[in-house]
Length: 338
Image (cartoon, rainbow, N blue to C red; front, side, top):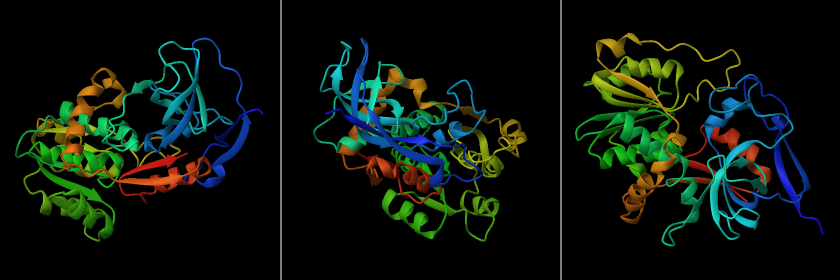
């Protein structure tokens, strides 16, 4: 009997807001693999906001091209090699890489593909959470660009998301005073009581964000970790300490704009505060992944890291999982378990 592969396709270019009708579920037979390829049975799909950018038409950049219509939505996945014609990826290997929303993927070892050696003391899904894209993004952004030192004031937006939850805890482990920005009392209380942020700011409050920043961080931020972009980034730039470091990680407020990203205010502050702003991608650090994994593994085993996950189940849920994640309905990392 022919093995079928259920996939979630990008059915059309999204409008101003992503909706379920932008995706379509289909099934097709799995064909033979060629020399140099291997077949992965996917076990988890990672929901990462940045992929929303490449669903738009004309979003080609120096990192990825626009996702083609009628093809599975691109994604970071974890799975097991079940058939192989590639000597470096034997059957039984557990791999993480970039393929798509589908039950089975054919790969050739490119697209960030790597074999992992799971630690039996840790949950397997951590290799797509604290030990995967979210954790490595949090770690390298903070350590390489933020360059934390004891006493620094660390401010991050989208703090209740997969990156924010991890980055704040690493910053605190490095001796920083941590300030998390999130939307709503529930998230802010969770950041303080469960994740351990020192101070929290509710950007949905009736008090303007700029006023809250001045009240909560009167000394200015030494490190800003930005996942939102747009107006919120501009507001954060207006409250920097001298010699601040600004980590440009994402722009979730901009991914659904159809007319390009909006400008950012207060850029002059980078000059007057002698500050530095730098962007990065976690894939820049492939050769150093073991460094981040060792650091975060030690925290997990010491029970000094909370690694929250919002788990959906079944390939058919991938579209809604992504929509919910973009709308900020999750606490921590969002995954789909197949």
